[in-house]
Length: 395
Image (tube, rainbow, N blue to C red):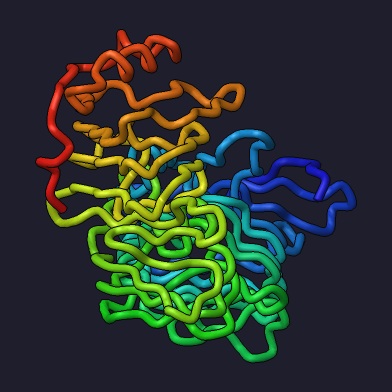
């Protein structure tokens, strides 16, 4: 909709700020202000404003930038766990969206901590980033038959969510065993929090990035049908807590992936796909792993912070594509091989080797590793150098 005249309409505790379409027939509610001192536990967004049909809700998406404004004119900063929640917003316990709405902008309903159920209007085709981010009490979301796209960060940090309701008439998605699956390519998009072990349905071929963003399943079982695990599939985002997944298994019949110790790896090129640190935040990379790329998924960890206590790289490690190392998120990094792995550093990828951590290297190969660090201009960023006997490392 091309924006035209700006208009304002008051209804009780709520003031609606809109842009009209150029033809004067439609209204875009881009902001709702809440008046202090008035009861506003229930919000019913009007179908029309000044005779114009309300078809769009939320701040416009800033192209090239992360969306950061809610419909209630609050700022969100997911990287700092700021979801737009305020005392005034939290007094809203129920919300009704008119069936005239066709577009909901990113972040629109972020921070509605007291709302338990939301029904998406039938004409809405997309749910974009952070739509319901941080809605702590949200239990049920009714999705429309018309839905063609759901960004899984739309439901980020919704710990109470128990039900996504979706008609079998929807041509894009289906829900099976608490999993939202895209039909055409069998992609697992989002896992509903369950608190129970989860068997990913047989037939799923791809696990998408951040599919387990809200997952509460202690163990996740990957079936034989899965052919691709996308980068960060099991990871949380930024400082979000997700300490529930304790184990991930893969079917022995899977032709692409296998598990060894704390790692799931690609059988063909021996690259790491999924890593599961233990309860002490220690991770032993499997001896079956020969290659590290940025495409792995680190379970229950946040790659923007120092989350791990210790990472031990195996002697088998031969090749690393930066940022395949986990040095930026580990306090202590151990190398066990006699020869450092070959490193490929794509342009703009940051430090080539683990930095800002304590580095442990085999005592007989200290010179080799220090020369390696100097070669990649990372030696001055190591917290401390430590020599040790790899034979003392116990899994």
